[in-house]
Image 1 (cartoon, rainbow, N blue to C red):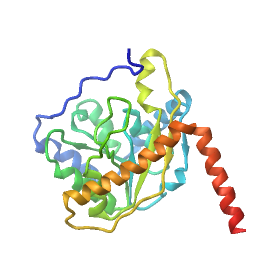
Image 2 (image 1 turned 120 degrees about the vertical axis):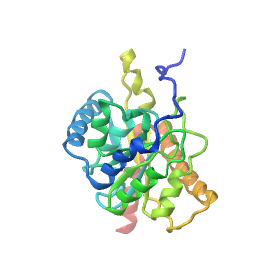
Image 3 (image 1 turned 90 degrees about the vertical axis):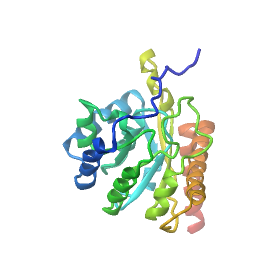
Amino acid sequence: MSDLAPMREQVYTDPRPKEHFDRFHERARTREPDWVYDVVRVITSLYAFTFLRARSISSENAPGSGAVILAPNHFSFMDHFLMGCFTRRKVRFMAKSQLFKKPMQFVYTHGGVFPVRRGARDEEVFITAKTILNRGGAVTMYCEGGRSRTGRLAEQAKRGIGRLALETGVPVVPIAIFGSSRVRNWKRLQFPKVTVQYGKAMRWERVENATREQQQAVADEVLKEIRLLYSGLQEHGRKGILQRLRAERTAKNAVAA
C-alpha cells in the first residue's frame, strides 16, 4: 500500500475552445488580483502554518519587487498557496484550464490565476505571463509542468520555463517545496511538515527566438538547482539546512572582518 493518498485520474485534454478562455487571459493582463487573493492567502496560510508547520528558508532570495519567475517543484494543490505564504507580493499563477469552472473560477480569476489549455499548444499563456512580467510582476511556473503523481521530482523539465526565461530575460528563483507530496494525506488525518527553500536567482541573456534546444537547456538547469535544494532538505532536514546556512554566514563574516 502506498504511503500517499490516491489522486484523481489525470485529464490531459480540455475540449473547450481557445475563445472560452480569452476573458480569463484578458482579466489577468489588465487587472491585478483583488481582495479575493488576500482572503484566500490568510485562510491557506493559517492552514499551512498550523497543520503543515510550513516554514521557509532563504525567502529573501525572492525579490520583493520587480519582475521574477518563481520556479518550485510541484507535488500538491497546496503548492500554489505555499508560494503566497512567504511573500507580501501578489504572486500570479498559471493553472490547468480544467480548474476554470464554476464556482471556483471566480476565486481563480479574482485571485490573479490564468489558464493553461491542456492538450493544446497554448500561446496565450505566454502572452499573459510576459504581460505580467513586463509590469514588474511575479509569476509562478512549474518547470515540471503538472503535479508529480509519484512523490518524486521529474526526470526532465518541460521547456516552457526556459522559453519564458529567455524571452523575457527576467530572473528565475528555483524553489524546493519539501513535504507537500503528502499534503493530500489529510484524508488519513496525516499532516506532513512542509519546508519551502528559496535558491539564489538565476538569469540568462534575453533571446528573442530561442531554439527548442536552448529553451530545454535553461529549463533543465532550473530543475537541476531545484533538485539540489530538494536533496539537501531530504538529507539534512529543515534544521540541518538552517544550521549549515548559519555556519556559512558566520564563516563569510569572519573572512570579511
